[in-house]
Length: 135
Image (cartoon, rainbow, N blue to C red; front, side, top):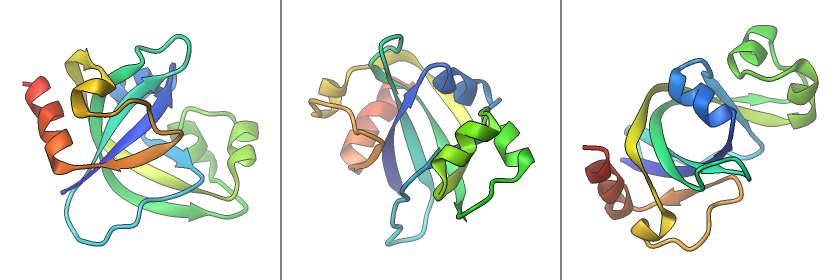
C-alpha cells in the first residue's frame, strides 16, 4: 500500500471530507513504483486549520492538465476557473471515499516535526498509527 500525507487548507479540507470535493489539483504527482491502493492522509494546514492530521481518502487516478481544465472538473474541485488556470500545468488527483478521524492526530505522533509543503510519502508504520487512531 502507498500512503501519502497531503497538506490541505480550510475550507478545502472540509469539502474533501464531506465528499463535495472530488478532485485535488497539485503541481506534482507521486511516482507509483508498485501497484495497489493509495491512501491520502490530510494534514489540515493554515491559520484556521487544526494543524493536525484529520482524515483520509483514496486516490483513484491522476490526470495531467497542461493548458485546460474542463468545467466539470473545476466544479468538482470546488475552485474558480481563474484559480484553476493559475495551477496550470498541473495534475488532477481524483479522490474518493473520505473518512474523518475521530480525533485530530498531531504530526509528532507519527514522528514528523513539520508538515509537507504539498505532499510527502509516509511509511506503512506511520499509516498504521493513523489507522489505529481512526478506530
